[in-house]
Picture 1 (tube, rainbow, N blue to C red):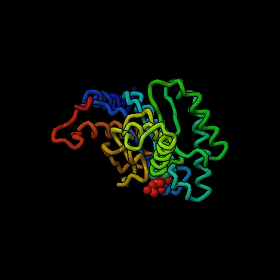
Picture 2 (spheres, helix red, strand yellow):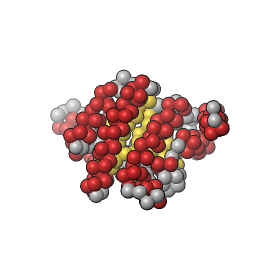
Picture 3 (tube, rainbow, N blue to C red):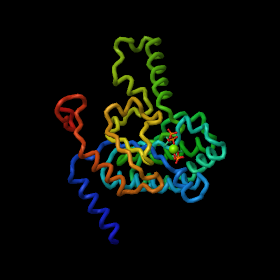
Picture 4 (tube, rainbow, N blue to C red):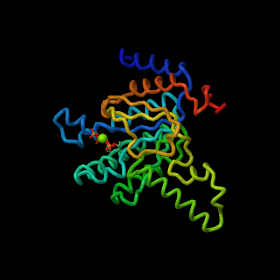
Length: 258
Ligand code: IPE
Ligand code: IPE
Ligand code: MG
């Protein structure tokens, strides 16, 4: 084992003994373009390098026992980028699926894609379907990939679902509960994120999980996404473990909500 690996193991042990591990971590993976720009490379090279950071983050979650990971890979607004960049991102999605599908399945990672898949190209849509099918049995980590995702769209779509149920007489408007709303979101089945990480130093949420992050702890790191590694992930979790989560009360609220 190298000195770097030993260091990482020590940090992992520190996180494990420092407190509760977040059940759900969400990440806004930002800074690929700047990473490439700093090196005089085209933007897509930053996206390609970013795939390695995805692998490191999945590994860190498996090692730590995080059960849900939601990665913001492509926003609805990102469709307005130059066609060339969008095409490169779609190709990278298929490449990621081809290369990682079997390993993810072996490790018990269940992949779901959140977002408007009707806008994806046919090959990208096939990739999405194939990774969801091949990993459907995974019970270790639920990996949600937000692709062609916009939170306002998600909320509107949930509102439409509930409105249709009301019109059908299956639900009364006065009885709509938060649980009904949550069940109609793309993230149904995942608890709310405990920790939201954004890389590249930007202090905004960019239309990501607006309903779900109501009480998430936010960790912003200046590290650009392609440079993000296990160490950065563990440090984000340590930062989270130092927070006092009060949910509006005057005293900290424990894991079981009391
Ligand atoms: C994040 O990196 C990846 C996507 C949004 C697809 P960016 O491409 O936004 O990189 P910057 O923010 O321009 O550096
Ligand atoms: C947010 O990053 C979307 C993803 C990480 C996929 P952007 O780079 O698109 O966000 P803005 O434009 O800085 O808000
Ligand atoms: Mg960006």
